[in-house]
Image (cartoon, one colour):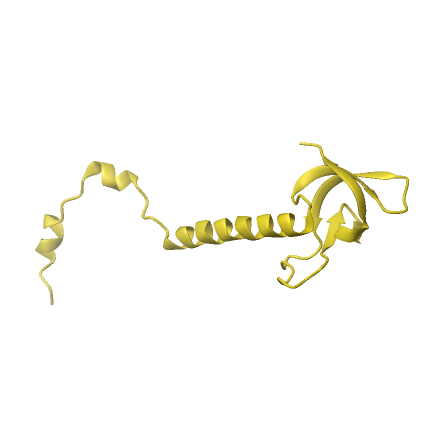
Length: 106
């Protein structure tokens, strides 16, 4: 059995009590978020689009303009060899090649 008197010898600094231990998972989240931003930027560059921003766009063969936040239709990023990407604007889904013209609104 260990001597419990040694527990009283532990020196607690008052400032340390106010700091929460750093969550190692937090660093993993920041790494994931950083990698995700880079991947989204690659998709934007490859397909000539902007993601997760409000846009006004017109689709080929359609006179109507649509407005909303342009996002990927899937949570998965397209594979590197993909020639098109499925997008969503509200309830409307289409491929990047269907876009005739777009402008960012924010």
